[in-house]
Image (cartoon, rainbow, N blue to C red; front, side):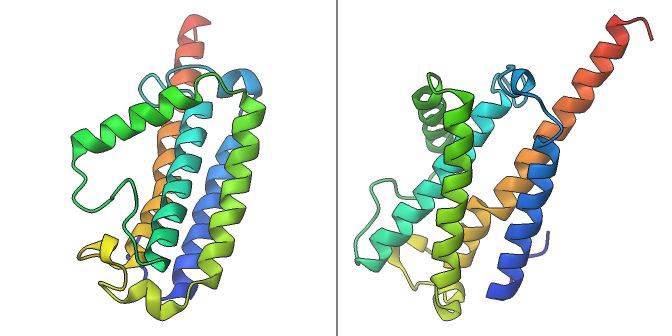
Length: 175
């Protein structure tokens, strides 16, 4: 996906990648969605909780920026180890939640982030340094990273897992 240079393009990419992800999800049953192994040890439910959590992180970052403060979890300079630790924390926090709860939050966080993005002035999205927490990146880079780029990653991972599972099912059935 090419880097977005306008709010209209960013919104289009968000809608497109979300629709593609939801199309992939629509092929799965509840049992498949809670089965481990879609992404490492994570189930599809875990991936969806992960996406919702990162959308909420962005919303907290943006809100902190509007208030002129720094977010509690600062995205700038976050290395792989810190991201992995945060992802593990998100995974652990969501383990006891039902699929229904996670699906509801997945839909609610999407509606929430979309409403916020639609309200952000385009100039604020693409001006580097508009918010102190964005470092050398523009707000649009964080929006894309926590929405369309993340949805594309999830769809790709889940799609590969579905193909692996289908192949293993054929092998077990002697085909």
